[in-house]
Amino acid sequence: MFSRGAFNSFKQAAQGASKRFTTQAGAGKSSTYNALMGISAATAVGSGASLYYLNKNSAHANMEADGLHPADHPFPQKTLFGTFDHASIRRGFQVFKEVCSACHSLDLIYWRNLVDVAYTEEEAREMAAEFQYVDGPNDIGEMFERPGKLTDPIPRPYPNEEAARAANAGALPPDLSLITKARHGGVDYIYSLLTGYCDPPAGVEVREGLNYNPYFPGGAIAMAQNIFDGVVEYEDGTPNTASQITKDVVTFLNWAAEPELDERKKIGVKALLLLSTLTLISLWIKRNRWQSMKTRKIVFNSPKNWQNTPSRKN
Amino acid sequence: MVGFFTKSFSSVVYRNFFKKESTYFTTIVASGVGFSIAFDTVFDKYWNNKTAGTKWEDIKDRYVQN
Image 1 (cartoon, rainbow over the protein chains, first blue to last red):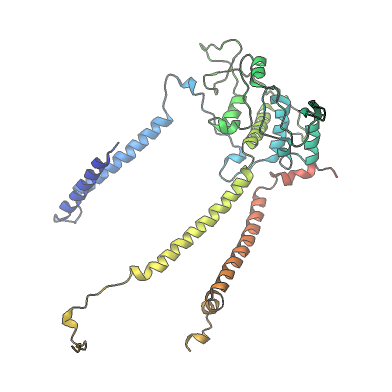
Image 2: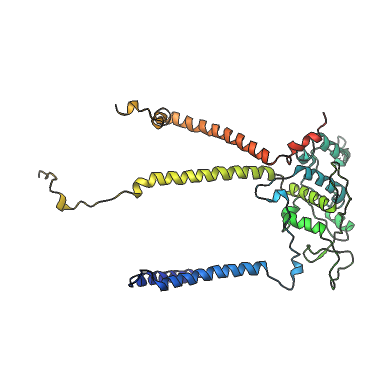
C-alpha cells in the first residue's frame, strides 16, 4: 500500500518537522510533530479496528456457500495445554465401528494404533480377528482369506471409490482418518455438522436425496443424520445421548488425525519453559558482558597536558 | 601468591572445574545430564498430576485381564 519511497519521504518529513519545530521557544515540544504522529497512529489503529470489525461482522448474499460458522465447543484437547480424554477415544471408536464404518473408511489407522491408546493388546487382537482380510499368494499362488491381525488396517466398507459412489447415490463418503485436520473449523465443525441437521428454512429447497444442514457449505449434504439418542450402547454406562455420542466420535476422529497430540503438548510445555528460561539467562549474560564496554569513557588527553611526559631522546 | 588461598565459593569452583578444559567439559556434560533427569522427573510428576484420569495408563486397569 505504502511504497517504500512514499514511506521514506513521510519519515523524512516527520523528522524534518521534529528538527524544525524543536528549535521553537516554549516547552521544547513541537505541536505539529505531535499532531502528525497522533494522526498517523489514529489512522493505523482506526483502520486496523475497522478491518477487524468488518471481517468479523461481514454479511454477503452468498453466506450459505460458506456454511454456518460452528460454535466454540469445550473439547479438552483444544486448549493450549489440553490433552485427550482416552476414555472418550475408546467410546468414540465404538461409535465409529457401529455407525460410521458402514460408509466411511479409516485407511490410515491400523489395529495396532489402538493398542495402549484406547484398547489393550488382547482387546485389539480380538477386534481385528472379527474381520476377514485377503492375504497371499500362498505356496500354490492363490489369494486366501484369513482373520485380521494387529498389523492390518481398519477394514474399508467399499473396495474402491466407484463402489462407494454407487452405493451412496453418487456421493463419496470421505475417508475420516484426517477429517478434523482437513476441514475448516476442525472438531467444532464436525460436531456441529453431526448435530446440526434440521428442517430447511422457508423458501429453501433441498433436492431429493440430499439433506439440509446449515453447517455444510452450500447447505445440502448427501449424508443423512445417523446419530440419534440411544443409537449406541456404552459398556461403561455413559449416558448415550446424541450429543454425548457425537462428542465421543469427534474426539476419536481428532485422535485419528492427531495421535501425537498428547506427546506434542507435553514436549511443547517443556520446550516453552526451557527456552524462555534460557532466553532470560542469555539476555542477562549479554548485558553483563557488555557493561564494561557500554559504560566506558574515552577521554582526550590534549598535548597541553603532556608537561610531565619525559621527552624522547632524539 | 595472592590467588592461591582464596576460599570464596566461585574461586574454588573456578579453580577446580572451570580452569582446565577437560574438567570444564565434564562439568558441562554432567550438569546437563543431571538437570535433564531432574527436570524431566519433576515435570513428568506435575504433568501426570495435571492429566490424571484422562490418559490410557489411568483407565487401562478396567480392561486388563490377567
